[in-house]
Length: 562
Image: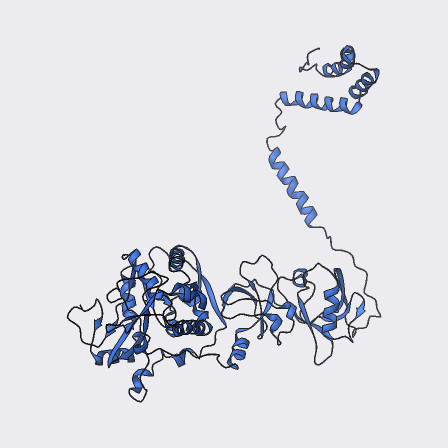
């Protein structure tokens, strides 16, 4: 084959090669049909044109071309700006026909809207206007089909749906028509004259403190538009324009459509009309029982000074009225109505104090045994409070170890100043757990494990302590009988008590007490652990502690600002 020439005279070299190729390949072609194909392919004019362009560009590139003028780049910029100015000065607005002279100024302007609706709801509610009787758009659900279209607004009057007049129909009938419609839906509406404020993405997050099912709510304007949630769910508030019904969606939900939930004020009013189901009664210290052995584990010893909580009854108010009428009472706490709590994300920083860990559970559930195992696992990391008492110190006791021994007068003064988390009287002596004892443990850079009655939890939920509340819950009655058959209860903490086996009455009381705690104070619990098996419950508890120190949690907004 002849070689390709790339010099200045190579214009014809490639053409000659193309022309000669079929003849040179003829000995190697089996049929006349193939040879005809080659002649046709290499004789194609478009191929020759491409070859010619290639040769010209190759030759031009070898000449190393440079701009004729040194200011060519600047001239190109000027030309570009000139074109831009020319285009920008032109008027591209459409030329509209003149308005007709006979238009009726009183006539309402009608807008025809077509929306494509799949299986999702339209995302709008309607109502009949009390004054005009017209069917109007009551609300637009944020993120729904109507909201995304930007064509339908609150206050718009609805005249037709898919060509069906709706003036004489009830809102429920219209909703049924919309529910049955799929694909494109055509609306004829009269636009509202109200100017709407620009929609902003909701940045407020709340934790629900109760369960809600819109299907069971007779007051909701549209059950299909409602948002169901469970106690503890975090919701993103999308709109609070309606004082009765907020718009919200589940935090992290990829679906942009919001749903209706009762507003805080509305739900508080509804809860206030209901009587509390149960009232928790404080336990008398004379009947106080501590669960020392669980699920077949026989603990032969009880840690000295380990009893750190007091579930005590207050004496008759007539005896010492001023002392026991402090704000930290059961009556004060049950006046609160759990609805929603505004929350924000919080993650403990390395230099922050540890969060207070509050353990709550009924007598005999194994709470103290779990706390004991945590303390033994790492005495440098976990700590418990030292309680106060007015009883005389015994010979084998040291002040500040088993108890902090103070006078009765000082104890009563501290009670009046609300320095105690819990307190009570037993055999004419006062016992109590102080706030300062919690601060003392946290100041040592330890995790403070605090065992208290649930009604005191509310008063610990502050910026200072940022408590994480864990509810230790008993298993079923059958499992209690099975796992506690060899376990015992140690009663009468302060005196030498005897270990007694669990009775059937103890099991029933434990389950009943747990139900009362969870139903009345469950909205304050961050974690629920069922103590079915001590080793499993401890493992779950330890995992929770590890996450608490490293992961991000939702906490009340007030905890992020002092």
